[in-house]
Image (cartoon, one colour):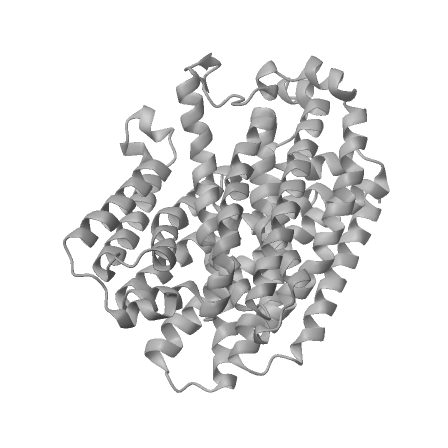
Length: 490
């Protein structure tokens, strides 16, 4: 009964999410209603849904784990997103002008059908991986509140709820739900951070307990087994967090899909302005809460006196270090963000399969009723795939970087080339997507075969270099694209 208030808050959130979803169900009658909310979302809704789809378990668990281990240097991971947003300000109106359903729509229009299929495969790998650690994060929250529910059972419970919730009403339910969640996480974050800082003994208390590296630009990035490897090694590790996050932001299908859902190009650009400020504030708050919470438990953790996985530091702090009402609201906000992000990243690849495979190659004359039925069936299948990954997951941070890297190397280069290059060719795009995906997947699966120095590194540099080189070299030796291919992007 000691955690009753936390259970009540989670129950209220679940009921509220279901109510929002069911309220939108009657509006879903066509493919456009389900996939892009009838292209009707105003700027304020776009801001909320962009924030909620971006800041989920990747920030609240992977980012928090980074902050736990490296202090404020963990913000290198977030900074990649901030930099990407500066570029997105100029891309957003072009994306809304194009106004299709998915990234592979865009890729086929600019390149060819093979590029479309390969990009769909890359997105499935990346987005089901992202969905998997949302499931695991939700399971961790249930375990913290209800210790008798182990991590795996909690993961199954969250997966079932998310799959059912996502299948109900599509983009509209996802977007309007995000408005409420965005307000909740922002308000409670501003309340929780100073309370935790005070509990940790203020800034003096932080410096007394935490390693000095937690307050430096590179944290522990340049260290191996406690030994410094130099500034260059630290910068290399920092950019292994910065680049995947930045490039995921620049090519993120979930983001473009929401731009396609905007009322107008003006709404799309205005949404990015709000997104810039919201992301900076929330990511910084999340890192601060993780650092403040880690300071409170730092000594006990390193003496193995507490059962704590670093990626759980924010919900753990909500449960143990905050006043019960504040802690319950923070826990509820984290839970809601996890559910929201899982919805976004489960919904997005189902859109790919229905739009880029089913209606493109299997059933071109499919009715709206048939499309809605198949879409919901695909959500179920992809959810099961994500669940399999979730139950075998060992590190949220590593899984996040794996997913980000696939997308960064395979999708983002060809998407940006579609908008900003008139010379890149279809064969070059096909080669780039295929090699970017292959290098990332094989690097991850074959770490045991790599030399120890390489096995410790993320795949972003080799995968991105191979992807960009192939894009450039194959473009140089193949004929330029036709005027018809370039027309939609001019």
